Amino acid sequence: MENLLNSGIPIILAFQSLGEWLLVPMELFSFLGTEDFYILAIPILYWSIDSALALRVGVIMLLSSGVNTIFKFAFHAPRPYWVNTDVNALSAESSFGVPSGHAQNAIAIWGMVGSYFRNKWAWAVAVFFILGISLSRLYLAVHFPFDTVLGLLIGFLLLWVVNRAWNPVAQWAQKQALGKQIFSALAGSLMLIFVGGFVAWIFRDWTMPTAWLQNAARAGGEAPHPFSLSGIISSAGTLFGLFAGLAWIDQYGGFKASGSSKERFLRYLVGLVGLIIIYIGLKVVFPSGENFIAFLFRYLRYSLLGFWVSGGAPFIFLKLNLTDSSKQ
Image (cartoon, rainbow, N blue to C red):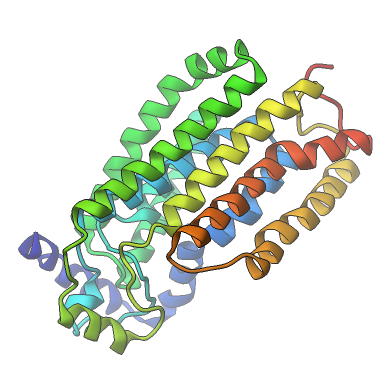
C-alpha cells in the first residue's frame, strides 16, 4: 500500500507546480464537498427547488459519507503530507486518507443529479464538478491519486446500487405504517454506526506512526484523530431524521417544492432559522467529545437536523400557507 500511495507523489508535485493561481479555484471546488456546503445547499434544494431530487441527493450523500468512514477505518492509510514533506500541504484533515470522501461523494451526488435529469447538459455539469472536486484534493495535497480513484469507484458503485434500489424501497415504505417506517429508519442508521464502530474496534490496538503525527503537526490545522466516530454518527443521525420527517409529514399530505418565487424564498428564510438553531445553537449547548454521552447528543442533534429539513420545516410551511401538500 505504501509504495502504491507514494507512486502518486510526483503527480501531486506536478499539479502543484502549475502555480498558486490555482489555489482559490481548488479551494472553492474542495468547499463544494464539505458538510457546511451541503447543510446550506440541500435544504434550499428540498424546500425551494425540487424536493424529489433533494431527497435523492441527501440520502446518497449521507450513505456515501458513512460508507466512506468505514472504508477509511479499514484502510487506515495516511494523507500525502503525513508521509512526505516535499508536498505543500495547502489544507489539513484529521481523518485517514483512503478513499477520498470528496471524490466519492462528488460522483455519488453529481452522478445522482445527472441520472435524475438524464440529459447531456446535466451530465456535462456533473462531470465538471466531479473532476473539479476530485482534482482539488490532489492539488491541496490531502489525497494521493489512488485515494481519489478508489473514492470515485466506490461512489459510482453506491450510485448504481441506490438508483436500482430507490423505487422498490420507496414503494415498500409507502405501504408501511408510520411506526414501522420510523423504526426501520432508526435500525438502518444504527446499523451504519455499528459497522463503523466494529471496524474501528478491530483496529483498536493500531497506533499511528510518530512520523505521521509530526508531519501533520508541521502542516498545521486540526491534529489527526482518524478513528473518530463523530462523522459516521452525524451521517447516521441525519439519515434517520430525514426518513422519520419524511414519513411524518406524509401523514399531513406530504410536501412539494412548488409555489411562487416569493413563497420559495420565504420558505428558505423560515427554514434557515430552524436550521441555524439546531446546527449551531444546539452545538453550543450539547456536550462534545469522543465519549458515549457526546455521541448520543450528536446523534440527537443531527437527527433533529434531518427531521427539520424533511418534516418540521415543511409542516410549518403548510401551516403558513407557503406551499401545498404533495397530494393536492
